[in-house]
Image (tube, rainbow, N blue to C red; front, side, top):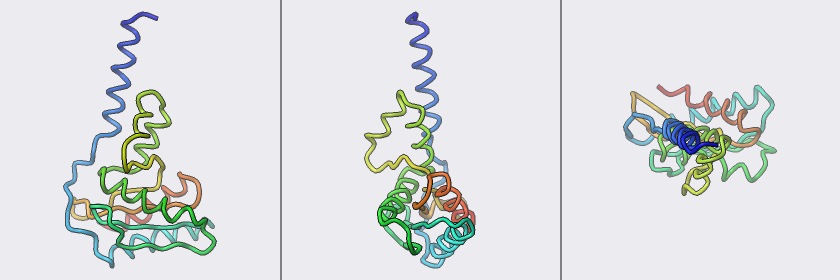
Length: 160
């Protein structure tokens, strides 16, 4: 392998990693209200019930403080903390937690994410955006990461 090829690959990897981690342009807004947090969680739980998935749902404010939490019966206990951490990841880094999962899955330079404090690299955390501002985030855990993401998206989509 030539050095030129190696440099080109490293440059491409660096560009891809930077693009995948680009933060959402939305500014932070006032914290999500308890009513809106419940609305988002209710939609996420409804999606989980529809698909027979057991889930834990957490909604946090922009700083990552828990605003609302709900766990369905028979959801594994470990999902409680994971849901909260997914929500915190999405709020604090202004992007879905799936962005970190994708970087880790790509290997190479993307593995650096594993040392980023507070970044959970699992799908299921999505920023909550209202009137163009990030008001918090929702995190869902309990089934596969892609199922968690489906439920989180259902919750996030209820707020505009």
